[in-house]
Image (cartoon, rainbow, N blue to C red; front, side):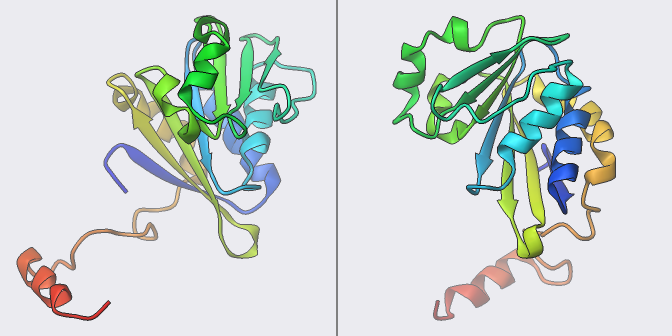
Length: 190
């Protein structure tokens, strides 16, 4: 995990919704949240929790066949599903000012398919399903404004966070110099 990432765990759908609700407390009009990861990992459930916390009373359903659903709440919510889009140009054809209005919070499922159309500053949630339906959610920032906001997001999501000692580590073992570890793996067969 990078310095601008968090790792969360959700053992069930209710927790996935609760993560969305906790995140919503730190979202502002104009924010874009991209959701990527495994099919069926809870992207729509997370948006449901966030939308409810933002005052949306209507049922939030997957926008797969409409591409964009708009909801009224204390803060308007736009829910985009880019699964069937072939790239950023198709999202741009919908009119970016309409898809990403300055007065709404926008959630983009399958944002990796349209990343070129996303604004410079956005928050990414990467959802993966692990054993026993456990979901791991990596929160990553994009742009120059989100790194400053990440501590507040981390605080809101603290009860779902994986302690650093349990998070997967990409670091070299402390007792082995970097060069030595690299030399050992280069000579080994894949």
